[in-house]
Length: 491
Image (cartoon, rainbow, N blue to C red; front, top):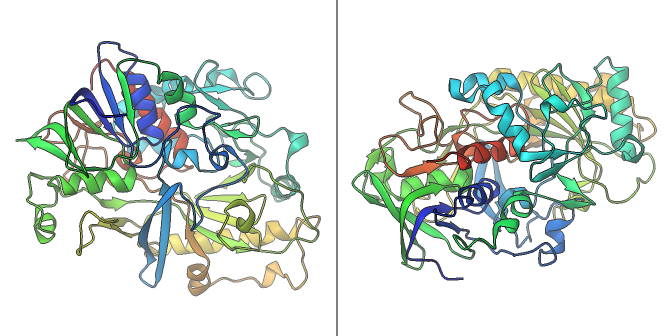
C-alpha cells in the first residue's frame, strides 16, 4: 500500500508501541494516521507466519527472517550480537509472551505524572485478565482490554517450572498468586499474553482489528531515514528511497535502538558527536543514546536427570528476590530458539536493577548502518556482587530439584563463581531502556508527555523513554505507555 503524501500523525515503527499508538490514535475518525514499519507485515491472524504465532518458540535465532541484529559489547572483553524484532509487532511478536508489569516502586524514578496510581488505569485498559476473580484480585486488572492475559494452570505446569516453584517455597520464598499486583517478592506463575497456544501481541490485539478504518494506513517494508525538520518543528519523514511524507506530528516508536538513531540521523543529539559523523547538528540534546539500562542475565547450565516433555511456553514461573529474577526456562534454547545451538538447559539469573549504564554509538563508517551497543555490564562492583549471590542461590535451588536436575558431579556448596565465570556465562535479556530518557534534567530527551525537548510536533513513545529499565521485563509497561499516550486527545 502506498503512503499518503500527508498524515496528521506519522508513527515510525510498527512494534509493540507503534501498533498500540496507531490503533488508538486512529479511533478519532477526523485524524489521519500513517504507520511505517521497516519489516514485513500481515493483515490477519490466518495470514501470520506460524513461527510468529507459536508461543513455544522464539524465532529470534541467527537465521531468523523476523529480526534485525546489532553489534554489541556486553563488557569490554565480551563482544556479542543482539536481535530485535523486525516485522509488524516488533519484538512483541517474537518474544516469550511474558506480560509482567513494572513494580510500583519502579515509577518512583519517573515524573510524578507517571506514578503507579496514575498509570494503573492504563495497565488495566490494556488487558483482559482471564484469572481475575480466581485467586487474582479484580482491583488490579482489566476485563475488556485488547491483550489476553492468563497464567499457566497449576495442573499444566511444565515439570521444570513446577519443580522450581516447589524448591523456591522450600527455600523460604513466598508464594505470589499475582505477579502483576503490588505486594512482596516471591515465586509465582508468569502472566502470559497467550491464547490457545498463540502469542497475542499488540499487532494482533490492537492493530489488526483497526485495519478497516479509512483514516489508518499501514505501510510495511518501509525504512525511515530521518525526521524532516523546519527549524525546531518536525514536518515529516524521509524514507530510505528518498520519499518524503509530510506530517502534522511525528512519533518515533522505532524501539530503544532505532529511535535514538533516527534522532541522531536527523541532527538531534550531542552536537560534537553528530559533527564527527558528518551530520549537521540541528538541536542539541546530549542525552540521546546515552545512559541506557538493560537486564544482564547469567545462564546457569545444568543437565536433565530424565528427558523432559515437549513444547511449552518458554517461561511459566519466576522468582523475584531483591534485585534478582530467577527464570527456569522450560526447554534448552536449542529447542526454543531455533539456530541458537545452546543444547543444555539453563536457569537464568537476571539483575533487575542494574547500576551500570550503556551507550548507543553510530557506526563511524556509515551512520545509517546498525549502531554499536556498548552495554558496559558488570562495571559496577555491586552489580557483580549481586549476580554472584544470585548464581550461588540458583545452584542451591537446582540442587533442590532432583526430579528434574541431574546432580552427578554437581555440588552447590562448592560452587563459587568469580568475575571471569560471570563474564563467560553473561548474556542480555534484550530489555534495553532509557536511551531517550523521560525527565527534566540536562540529559533527559523527552518530557512527561513523551515530546522531544526543544522541538515541536515530535514525540518518542517506546522503551527508550523509560527513565530506567523496569524491575520486570518491559513489554507490559511499554504497552501501557503507548495506551496512555495514544488515548490522549492531543499529543
